[in-house]
Image 1 (cartoon, rainbow, N blue to C red):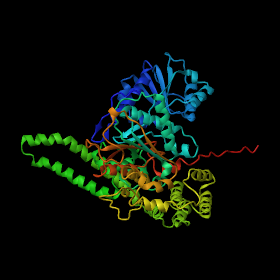
Image 2: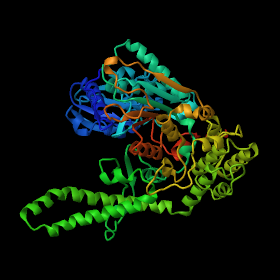
Image 3: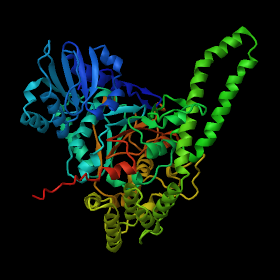
Image 4: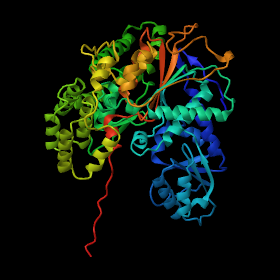
Length: 611
């Protein structure tokens, strides 16, 4: 892959604009192969990710006149020369595309050509499906667009593949690991070879082995770029299944837990964002907000513990009021002019303050509820090793009240993890109660949870050792001015981030015994860099380079990462003695409810014909 426009570092950070430009060029190259006017038909799951890479104005410049979501039955009418389907390689989507084509009337005044672009890879199975349905020959061209890692922010990349954990640990399908390996190779083509690779888990081992093969296929034709990323840490989600199951307590984490963040956007009740004296006559559509670091206040709030948000918002409100009051002190024309130049920024800041205050109030409503506090207490009992070896009264109460099945399964999985598995008698009791209260279809969900290790019967005692050795529980956590990563869960330090922290200093050798207790193999590999391209720096444990630049470590989470873990890594990067900047990549940004949802099976009831 050509390394067009070598990346540069800006105060330790990687310039992800280089990656975004790379994808834009590839996309336009794909689209421009079709000459004439175009309509794009999108697989719904791709619209968010594509929006983060290429805006509509760019597509318009390349004769894209219309865009439609891919739905069942018939294509919407459009007078264009080319209709381009952009889709993930999923069999159910091939059925939708086939339905669209079979229902299409080809007798129009001009001939329309059909094209298919797979994202990120072509699939022989999908092509076979289209052939079986008699539509494959309809396509003038079948291409692939390798959109792998989507830049969400200046330090965050996501592949937005939400089924990775299920595929790897339930279905034994490691296709996504190939995409991960390929995405890292793309990063190396743009930012230089990563000298030091570390990993933990079976999937991490798969990825490193595939990278080795891909490197061999390049035959020494790697781009000659000074490495911009010093270390790569690949972590399997099943190395730390506890962290995503717990309720995140950062501002961004709680927005995700409460309302669901998707491709950096969130939909919230519109009533909350209109003046109190304007009562709507009918229910309003939810209002969509983009939440990322382009909003200064949000960038300041997102990684804070929610208990610290109120005081920051209050200080910001006072600061903005003081700045607006400066206009009364402006006496000369020069002073007035100076205030006027500041005005657009001040108005934007005030608008942001109003929005974030409203969002914080919505989150506070959720966190103040009895159910939220009781769930949190139950989780904290479990992580502290309390009441893990018996039927928990709060879980019993939730089942009796027919509370959310996802919430109940999440709590049982936390109890299972913190007790190194449940006693068979307790596990059978929970299963029986769930099936009686919620229906037999949850038997398969429970089996899936067991198969992936989220739920298990009692085994070797390891959690207490890991908890103590890695200092996962911190009693005197400071939520306002934190001095440890445990602030993101108000007293629990994410195991995954402790592993990253120990790797940076003093190194994994200091925790060899703990690493051996965690699932999957440990991976360590050195990639040779030509002498002329080497930085004057030895390894991950050397604090700074001779130029005073911070090391950059790419942490890649296989199976998902939570916003709380992202916040914890950003916290580590900000520490004076840290010496490491973190670039975060993941197959998907997840939370506990989403993880449990992927384990569920949809069972359609079959009506039996009595005759």
